[in-house]
Each structure stands twice: as C-alpha cells, then as structure tokens.
Amino acid sequence: MSDVAVDPIDNPYERYAFLRREQPVVQEAADGPWMVARHADVMTILRDQKTFSSDVALRSDEEKKIRPSMLFSDPPVHNRLRKLVSYAFKPGFVENQRALITDRCESLVQALAAQDEVDLVQALAAPLPVTVIAAMLGVEEGDTLQFKAWSDKIFSNIADLLFAQAGEDVQRAAAEMDSYFLERIAMLRRQPANNLLGRLVETQTDEGKLTDQELLSFCSLLLIAGNETTTGLITASVRIFDEMPQTFKQVQEQPALIPSFIEEALRYYSPFSATIRRTTCDTVLAGQAIKRGALVIPLIASANRDERVFDRPDEFVIDRSPNPHVAFGFGIHNCLGAHLARLEGQIAIASLTRHMHGIRLADGEVSVAGQLGGPSSLRVKIIKA
Ligand code: HEM
Image 1 (tube, rainbow, N blue to C red):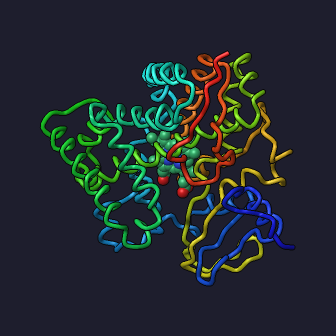
Image 2: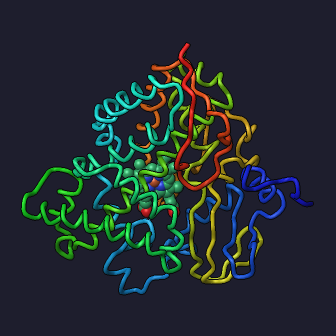
Image 3: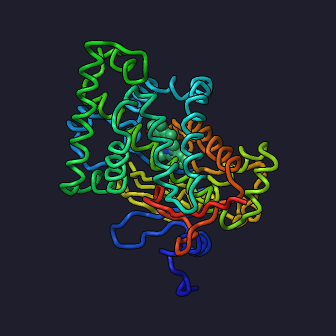
C-alpha cells in the first residue's frame, strides 16, 4: 500500500491515517525516533513512565540537577516540581481567573469584531493566554508582546534546545527571558507578593528555598507550555467555524454546547500534536521491538483520530460523548494547565459567537491545522450581518 497521493504538509491527518493503518509503530529513518500512531499504543507509552522516560534532553546530569524541568523529568524529581505549582491550576483556583479572562477576552473580541479582516493570532489567540499566565505569575505589567516573542522563538525550536546546540537567536531569546525573570525574582525576594511566582519564591522545600535556576525553569515552562497551545486551540476552533459554518450557529444558539465544542476541537485539531519519550530498556510495542535509549514520539493528533476508539473520527461531532481524547496527554505528565486552557477556550468561543454573525478564513489561508502549537498568523474575515 502506498500513500503517494498524500501531501503530509497540506494534510497531516492523511498521513496519520496511513500510519495507523499500515505502520502503527515505525522508525522512518535509521536511528531516527519511533512514530506511534494508534490511541492504545500512545496510552501505553503515556501510562508507563518507567519504560518511557520523559528525561529526553541531551543535557548533563549536573545541568539537569541545577535546572530541572517538570515536563522533561521523571519521578521523584517530577513529583516534587509538580506538587509545588499544582495548587494554582486546580479547578477552584482556575475558576477565580474567570473574571480576568472574560474582561480581557471581551475587549479583544470587541476590537476584532469592529474590523472586516484581521489577524486572529495578533488580535486574540496570542494575547489572551499570554496575559492570563502573566497575570497569574504576577508579571502582567511586563511587555506581553515580548513574552510572546520569546515563547514563540523557544517553542518553535524546542527540538534544538533538547537535542542540539540551539541557534544564536534562540539562545538570545532564552537569555533575555531569564534576565527579565531574574529581575522579578530578585524584587520578590525583597518584597514578597501573593501571586504564583511570589509564592514560589517564598516556598520552603525539604531542600530549602527554590534556587533562581529552579524558579526560572517554572517561569519559562509555564509561559511556553501555556501560550502556543492555547493559541492553537483558539485558531483550531475558528478553522472549524470556517469549515463547518453551522457549528458557529449551533454554538451561538445553544451556548451550553460550548464545553463539548471545545473538547471536540481539542480532539479534531489537537494543538499539542505530539510529545516525546526515551526508552529506559529494550521493549516491545504493538509487536515492534524497540531498543533501550530510543526516542519515541506518541502522535497525539493521530491517536485522537483513531477509528478503533472514535466513531466517525474524521467528522467534527459537536456533542461527542464520550470523548476520550488525549489532547492534554495522560498519566503523570498530563497537562497541568488543562482546566485553564479549557476555560480560556470556552470564554473565547462564547465571546466570538456573541459579537459577530460568523467568521471565515480570509482568502488564501490554509484550512487544515497540523503543526505543533498555533500558527504565527491566521487572517480571518468577520461576518457582520
Ligand atoms: C489547549 C491548550 C493546551 C494543550 C493542548 C496542552 C497539552 C499538553 C500536553 C499534551 C501535555 C503533556 C506532555 C507530555 O506528556 O509529554 C502538557 C503538559 C503540560 N502543560 Fe499543557 N497544554 C495546554 C495548555 C496549557 C496551559 C494553559 C498551561 C499553563 C499555563 C500548561 C502547562 C503545562 C505544563 C506545566 C505541563 C507539564 C506537566 C508535567 O510535566 O507534569 N498547558 N500539556
């Protein structure tokens, strides 16, 4: 069977379907990473952190100790880091952000709705998540466009940061972000504040207070993990409105559909399309032998279209239930910001459908979403009446 007709750049979902059918666990280049396409196998990996480690980065043990990353560490380091911040992402705490998110969203959407054609990323999908996380960290007076520029640069070069020498501009962005946060941390050590970063600065652990490097690791992870992905969720939702304009009307007429619309958007165009693990021992996955030390890529966006799990997987079913997507991952690393991302997505959709009659992609925009995170721009036309 060949996939010659498929252009993976235009439509990654065609490629995922081919992989699920023909090569569910495949190494596309000798010594390259293993791609894993089916839902059950993706779940096996995400569930089993002993065999599939998140400690993938090619950094020395010393570097990892000095600047540990929650996302790229295993227990017990992972548990310790996650426990320190998890309170701020629990449903009750996140609910306290509702007024802030709604205010910010309403003013962005009102400005957007007054135009005929606009870049959705600039106008809403990027500034909304960046302002929310900046407010939670207590750095809202900082330049949110600057945060966005740093996080874009680092996120889009994450593979280089993990496995190779990052380019000069990426290193510069990381250094600038560090020095911005170092200044804030120094200020908070002098003058405590009751925000997420302020509380982290004050936190006592068994090993004493957190070091600057540990604090920087939290700041950059939260800023980077929370931004691109939420931008991706908002742009994915608007692509869906464009492809299936009836969904806009359905949500407008029945706002109670918004939570299931968002879950289905997360499944249909998963913004965090893939993650990464490294095997800690020789293992076998779906009959395929994999050597110790190999990189493995669970294709989340493919798992979320698996016909073995989802009825009509390539259809957008606005009230799909149950919807066992893995858009937020699964297991110990499941997305810490999932409640926050859902709330931001729901508020953004409610606001868009309240302030306009429809929204379409501008001429020339490509409909299918496939890249990791969100696009850097997406021009849309506002339908007024
Ligand atoms: C639609 C938006 C989002 C999506 C689709 C998403 C997706 C994911 C996924 C798939 C993982 C697991 C990665 C893995 O197992 O390797 C993850 C982890 C994580 N996410 Fe999100 N995320 C989103 C928004 C956010 C937000 C808003 C924040 C915080 C502000 C956030 C913070 C994190 C953190 C800190 C982790 C690491 C958790 C750990 O290692 O224990 N995410 N996210």
